[in-house]
Length: 124
Image 1 (cartoon, rainbow, N blue to C red):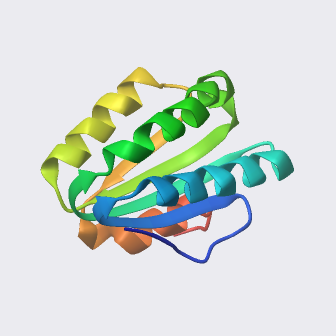
Image 2 (image 1 turned 90 degrees about the vertical axis):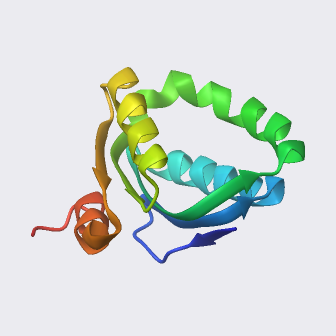
Image 3 (image 1 turned 60 degrees about the horizontal axis):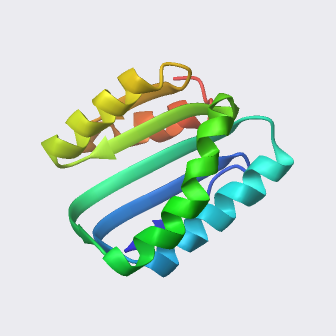
C-alpha cells in the first residue's frame, strides 16, 4: 500500500507498507511527472513499513515509466528513506553510492521527523 503524505509541491512524500500494487506505482509516477513539470528539483521522502511484496503485474508499466528518469537524475534533490527493515536501509545505501549526484540520507524509524524536515529543506 502506498499513501501520500501532505508536503510541499516540489516534494513527493510517501508511506509504503506491506504489498505494493501496480496502480499505486502508476499514481506515484503521475505525481512525480507532475512535480517535475513544475519544478527544476524534486525531493523525495519515503517511509517504509514492513514491505512484504510487490505486485508483479504492475512492474512492466512502472519500469517503462521509470527508466527515462535515469536521464533526469540531476533533477532529484534531497532523498530521504526511513525504513524499519535493515535490507531496505542497506539497499538504499547501495543505490545512493550508485547515484552520487543525488543527496540521499537513510534513517531509522526514530528519525522520521528529522528526515521529513530535511527533505522539505527546513532548518533543524
